[in-house]
Length: 184
Image (cartoon, rainbow, N blue to C red; front, side, top):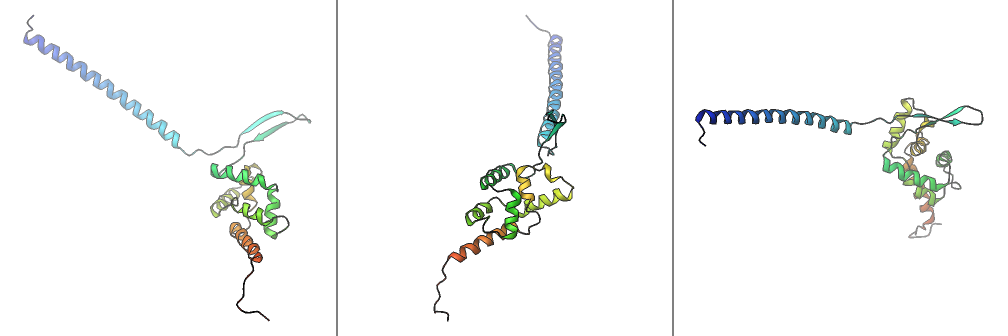
């Protein structure tokens, strides 16, 4: 079983051709997979705009189809969830709360309600988002619950600071301020 030099070179060249062909196929597959992976990763991290969807419902009493609109939400999901839960516990309409703050109505908004409300009032950045929505010609009837609540405060300057000051004023009235000498 002796192998000649020519046979040996033929086997070696066949093997090297085979491995170079395998390497070429492997690099082609790897390049294709890398491009597919980068597409998938790029698509998964793209910022997606929330769209308003219209879906037809069954006909009502008057025979017309009602359309259900998906609500527009642009406030952070966790914050929106917490605000929605908190404002639903207050048992007041959004416009009543806003009017109560504008008028500083102590009967409608007691101290406990105000302290609770402080956690759910919009920040300056959230008010800016509402103003941007309003300037873009957005329809407030299509806003999600938290955004609709924040929309009520768009025209009250520094609503959060105002309510904090109001709470301080109410608590200050309860405190007795000791004086060093009687005022006569």
